[in-house]
Amino acid sequence: MTLKIHGIAASRAVRPLWLLEELGVPYEHVSQTYLGGATRTPEFLALNPNGHIPVLEDDGIVVWESMATTLYLARKFGGPLAPANLAEEAEALRWTFWAVTECEKDALCVLMHRVVMPADKRDAALADQSEGNLGKPFAVLDAHLATRPWIAGERFTVADVNVASVLSWAQVSRKLMEANPHLADWLKRCLERPAHQKVRAMAKAGR
Ligand SMILES: N[C@@H](CCC(=O)N[C@@H](CS)C(=O)NCC(=O)O)C(=O)O
Image (cartoon, rainbow, N blue to C red; front, side, top):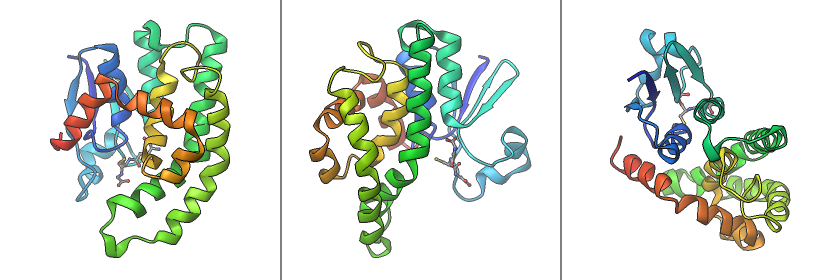
């Protein structure tokens, strides 16, 4: 098999893994962790000098940056998950860049300081601040989703995978979900999809 994804599912590798499961494309999954210096070995750094997962390898092509991996996969395997024209491609690109630049850092902070870190290490003030920062961008996506079921319009696409994978980190915020009902409903529909559930199960199993 030529297509390989390096990265445990409980990481940003969820993005290419989720998309591949949606596409039904066969791939090899290397359950590479990022803990304990595992991404600092010479072998791994030769693959991604940044020392991060995920990394995609496809027939000699190496792609790192999780969002680049999903856009690559959508472009290569196409189908209804890929942009069908320039307008849809612009939609996928703008919302993907929007998610990583306007939301990712704060969404991760909410997740870490509300759920993931041990209770005595959590800083509620940091989580509150990030929730506050997300108010504006979340309202923008909420308004967008008030008039269409999915980000690019009438069908689920790579744009939904990219954006939902970031915003899912802030789903624990009742305040943000209640303030943005269209976004909350869309996020729930994305995360309930069988392909995402499968990757969640992989994450829970430590794969
Ligand atoms: N912008 C990068 C971030 C990748 C990233 O930070 N991955 C984390 C796991 S989710 C990682 O490998 N961390 C280990 C480290 O930085 O040492 C992407 O989206 O791929």
